[in-house]
Length: 310
Image (cartoon, rainbow, N blue to C red; front, top):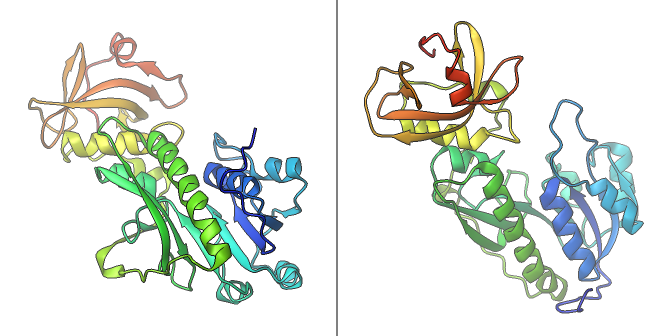
């Protein structure tokens, strides 16, 4: 039951653009605080994507909040937003870039919740990139939106640690909790006009583009740690890191870097399954041949011809 702690009964109207778990949880927090949400823009789930996250559309239906699944930037939707004349537009993992003419509509500004500790990892899929690059921390940041992506003044942010054993899924869950913490703190301050605006130093950060399944191709000349970071960065529920054996694609879902030497891609041992890299060995734990079920390395090596991964 809601205790009413930190609850803000605000007259400010909000248009929220939201998707994914971050969108769902941040909306829940706004609702808990009594925010006046006039309209939600979200997305239809893609039939080609594994949907492992909660539905913003279902939350809107449950709470009786009007919603649209078409792009907020469409002329007919801009007219809807103009009619609402919101005080704020808030974006939580919305997948469309919101155009400047839409950002100019809310009287008190438009803000975005980004899944990194800005200015680090501006851009797309920041959690995956942070894991792939072997970072030890990331976070969640609430900032004002401007035409340049993830570049406006910072209102609040929260760091999270990335353990060496964390997958992107693990880190995304941490970032989701950090995002809720940020909204819990920041929304009352935004309502009262007491929220800070800290200029973002873009030179202190970096920008990353989106990733495609094809970007998961393993380069065996890289170190075992680098390959391990790629594997845990794109493992379930993402498409996975892959290689080839005898012309067949093999997705490696779980592995671990160990000491040792071997030529890149060479099968050094089968019990356990050890593959040579540019520096160190990679112990394979679970994998999946294209068109077959995922299996353990022990089950796989029982019929393995002892070839070289490419």
